[in-house]
Image 1: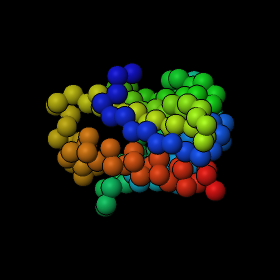
Image 2: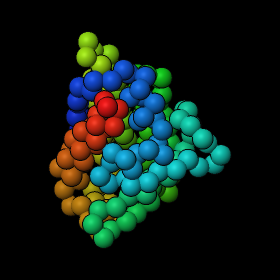
Image 3: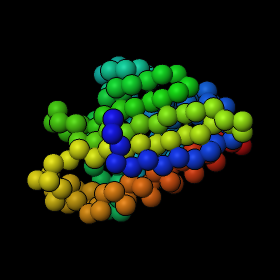
Image 4: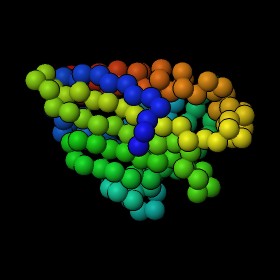
Length: 152
């Protein structure tokens, strides 16, 4: 993955606690400002390579649903997934976790793979015209809320 966006934050919690939180996609709505609900599909109940989940997203009065597949997972180190629409991977997301003296450094990655021809339609669906700025702000909020959830 060659991310377009990378946001990191030191979190005062052990890597295994952070990994358990971010890889439990049913909790994504607790920290993401855009994905308010995520649920496993096709009988999956936990993160594993090949597991698929549906993310329910909202921006103002705009709502949309996206399927994602877990493509890389190493317990307590990384969790990556591809978002797709009609079989086309249009974005890649992931988290890496590195131990530190105070807990861990959590890095969130995002790569936008939408073709130029899809940008206008995507903006209509989501209400987001500047996806990079929107995603960076969302990633910062996500890591802030994640830290608040696991540090206490």
